[in-house]
Length: 275
Image (cartoon, rainbow, N blue to C red; front, side, top):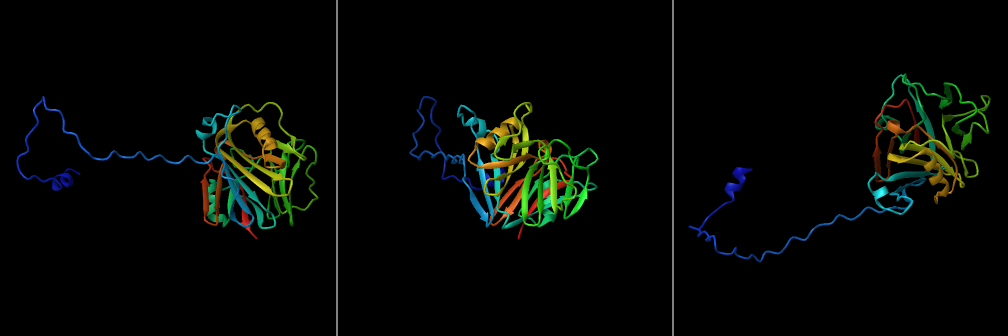
């Protein structure tokens, strides 16, 4: 750097030094205009990435409307999916868990999110169905299930509608708790005071699937349930998936890319592929 500066220096002769009493000579150089980066929108609105896949990002305020509550955190990311345009697959590899971005590299998918809870040994804590093959055991009396059978896609409360092993399933993930029960009924009304990163899957009253990712601590489970019910998302049912360090979403659709990788390696993900 020093050599470059010397190379650009030149002189036409002796330069008189000002006396200590001489005022500095004024310059007429224009002042630099400060560049102010535009503030990100608090709500991008729904933006279509490809047919059947819409993305929206929200920067939330607190209950008093203070912008800093949401502005200091990564935005809430939502993806809305039309089942007639996309298909859902559950991928499960308990012997080889990996981060969400690594799953996405191999899935040839538009979207990948982390699935349900798992043990230290990498086994899902509840039923997983991947391409018709079933692993692990169902939750009984609590939790919920995201399921696909043929063209049908749905969410069910396992407390109100227990898993039926005779029912044919192509894909399924069980997790807990149900954040919103059928008809927009709150599923979490007390407890759950920990604020943590969250992943959730929901369905609206038009049968569209919603994936929601809060990559930084923003919600308790109760707060998340309340947000979903009181938002403009028209949520009918919603299920909490594994959060914390498992939280991850990878999307590449059209010209849009979102990479919110999980910190932890996860044994199961939900992948969304074009039909």
